[in-house]
Image (cartoon, rainbow, N blue to C red; front, top):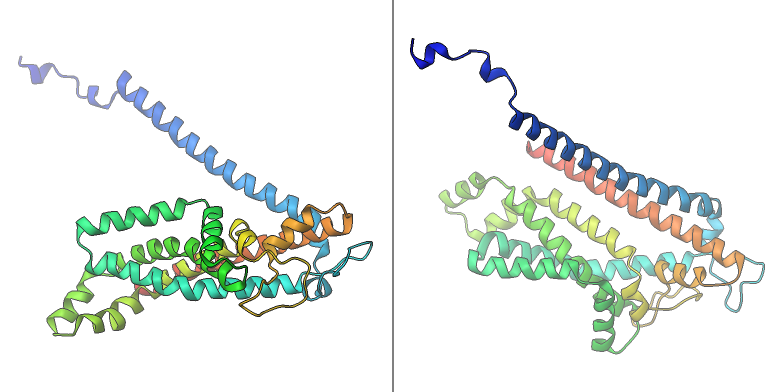
Length: 296
């Protein structure tokens, strides 16, 4: 009888020692990833609960609209209305600067850059995204030699650009190539293909990138400490002057020895966390909705 006749048909279905070892390693790695994800989610839940427990009770219409007392806190608690308005102004300035730069960089990377050029540009964006934000604040402060809303906006734009550019580039790469090829076959100019077909198709991803960048910029403290460190001031929206903002307000209130000021810091921190969470969740839902409409 030949070798094939002597083979046991059930042998191939019997796990060997090597297969059992690989399955055990695979299960261990899956368990480790699940545990890591659970720890990350758990830390977020604990953080939000901890801040909400101390700050949720502070939220009220007066707290969100009034200003802090100009001289001292005493037993009278103030509000964060000017800080909210200032944060909106600074983030709006930074987004107006960062959005066109980030989108144009993404278009260049996906549509025009060769592989030799695209790689260094992507490396620069990765370095910028990992750059400590305090460096952006110091750089802009030394460059403009002023503290103002537009200086803070420039510093936050440096933080926003890599996030908008990288996420927008990924969205542009997901646009079906057949759309561009069909436009080229019809003799449509390249710029019209970009503005009329590719960009509208990728608009959902670009909007998502912008919302995520806004959420990150709104919570940055280090850049605005060096560029717009106004604290406890009334409503001030002149972009050439320092404007109050939530991160600096929280930082200064938390360093106060007054219990009322510390309570205000917890309330402002809770508000900022809620706004950032809502922005992130809204961006994800918007992206999912836009991809569903595109059939992705």
